[in-house]
Amino acid sequence: MTSTRAFIFPGIRSRVVFGAGTLSQLAPEMERLGRKRALLLATPQQRNDVDALADRLGSATAGVFAGAVMHTPVDVTREAVAAYAQSGADCVIALGGGSSIGLGKAIALRTGADQIAIPTTYAGSEMTDILGETSAGEKTTRRDPAILPETVIYDVDLTLSLPKEMTVASGLNAIAHAAEALYAPDRNPILSLMAADAVRAFAAALPVLVADPFDRGARADALYGAWLCGAVLGGASMSLHHKLCHTLGGSFDTPHAQTHAILLPHTIGFNAAVAGDLLAPISAALGGATPGKALHRFAARLGAPTRLRDFGLTEADLDRAAAIAVKNTYANPRAFGQAEIRALLQDAWACTEPPL
Image (cartoon, rainbow, N blue to C red; front, side, top):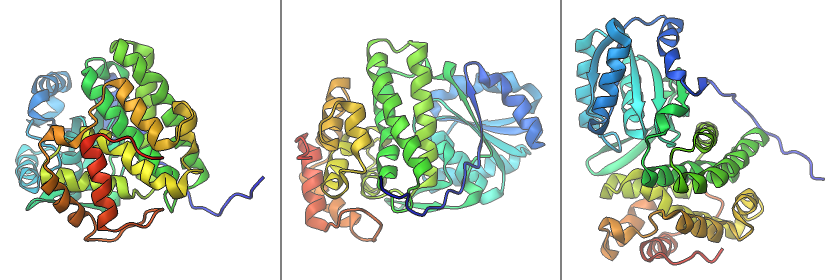
């Protein structure tokens, strides 16, 4: 038996309300925070849902901003901050996936507003103090305590209508957080246990949801896995996988969850060459193959997107993406240069199974 390495566990700082029908706790959670009126945030696609939430809150609704956009463009944030100021709100409530929740974080960072996040996908950003924003064709990220939502309400009922394709892509996006937490330089035993349990939860839930998207038990398991993945994303540093996803999303506007789904087997397979022991929970949960191969086969079994070229990327785009990805240094278990990144992206572009 090996001795436990020294670690720091900062704790989980957001209040979590988890279950079915928990949207009923929204007004009490506002009251607990001492807030009276909220600006509600959503994407245009969820306008009907956020309007229904506004009706539910009644006089506690200060306004609705249904203009959230993928990758949190700074110009959209400026519009939302102005709407927040004009509404007289004293908090924001974000309903939806990473786009809506990211906008809530951006407003909170600039105004000091309290946030309540109500995720309807498995993206996980609701549990982090990380904000990714796009400006001038590039995506940058930062961490700040002001970015972290005060309360997160997970309601299984809100995920029942999540389309099958987004269920799969969003679930693989979540698994990416757990996978990189397993080899993060600031990992700790608690986060590693949570990451391993998250992968197990999704490994069990996603195949069921592909067959029956309305299976409530599988929806609950997937949302539980998403909470775990979000928590480890908030507690550990992310590496090559997330950097490449931010590069493609910020500079080429590729869809966020689908980009994670496509790259995940290749980035994890690349790092498995030096971190295979740390990534063993992935192999155990997904059937015993090496981590990258296991993820690749799992994604194919689920019908997930598997090729970057399907999103319009050319091989010339891969050259540019590889150059952008090595502009700044960041922690990763395996050393790499532009040539290695270019080769990895080529495999993801063509859907070549990872070697490990």
